[in-house]
Length: 631
Image (cartoon, rainbow, N blue to C red; front, side, top):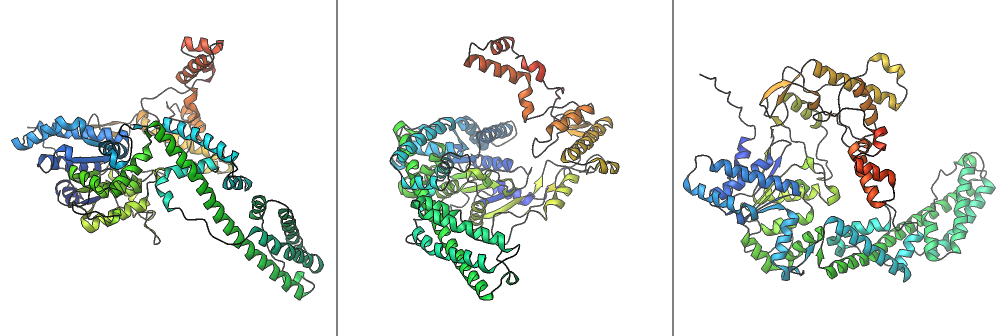
């Protein structure tokens, strides 16, 4: 008689997990720790809705963040349905699940962008879009943005757009990466839904000519007082700075307004004012101090006013580019990915008929990876989850249909800030769900060993805390390990170089090499001693191999050093990323093919392409043998 398998320990979050899966009349915000199986819970809730007869699959929307995640989600739904159909279930549930399996191909399980596209195609009139619109992929949209920018900028500069010429006079480059006008224009495109709320240009305020008229005599008097009555090592640098400021003001008076503004914006009057011991006359010091303070205050006021006006004027001008890009898309019948969200949100916010139609069409909305949701996506899902007889103007005023909205996420894993994912919006949405439903926490992590969980909880419990001044950082939720303890070893090790190396470590590379040598020695020891790892595929423990080890680093700066030390220890490795990617023979072959296509007269590349290996790869091939999985 074979021994019974030990009964698994009870889950620490069993109650919350059961409510998330089966309490379908309550809307939930589920916060899940890493490895807690939040997608599994979402799939279980979906099957409960379908299998119990609460909704057909075409009445349910399941949304995740990326195409890859959407594909995996649909596959997991299929696998769970097939598993249930293979088991012992009642006839009614079997019929519902079988129908769901047939309907899975056209179910609303996908990305928020794909879902919004389907809404717009169904109601193009209310959305105000071409019924036959095409979706511009990222490459096509990028080319159209660049083409539109070039045409628009050329026309605006030729027409003498004062805001753009002013920005250039202030030293703002037209196309400098991350700082130029083009980059600002692209950022405005990504936030096009907010442009209607841009603050107006400030009215009145300080005049550049008034400031110059005020500053020139006062700077001359200040410099005169410093030259006549102040001396010593502190006074000379300060006097030279004030003299430079005086000359800048004199120069600015002869320039146009935009150039004069630019000069004044670079003006610097702060500095260490000479102490009383450096002055021969105390009244002169008092006068100079008064002049200096008055100049600083007036300059700060003017610079702030110029900065505000310049920012508003430049943004106002670039709105013309946003409009030109919109017109270019309309001429070609295109929408880009951001349009899908903006137009869908506008349709649901402004058209009661469209909102009522889609609220009736979809009975349940399940949103995975909710921590990566941006403000537009929050508005869309809340409008669709609204009670049928309500029409709130703002998403946070929405009265939810009980049980209709279910979101899961982990705020500690929010990584898409560049796509406008906002942890504070997440917290506001969670609070709204708590008021009308409930919040649940899944803390049972199925991935790490107990020893590693203890280390992680100890480290991060004090580091990840909600700050007193906002909700931009979530509190830490401790993990509860599901796996038992490992095979008689700690869950983490700290590696140190031998003490006698301290005198030999003189530079950063020395430290990195010592660190790499320690890591290599540790990896070699693990394999030589046959440390045990659990093989999930085989369902058993086995000795660790080099392919089970991964060395993670923040950057590739030290990858050469690590490669050398690991190779010296006889450890096979594969480097993923970094410049080593370009040393592989396959990449050399591909480059040779592309060069030969670009220039058929390039004999060396043509020969390399025909051979399937460029001559350069013979001398630049990687010297480390590949492993089954990267070290």
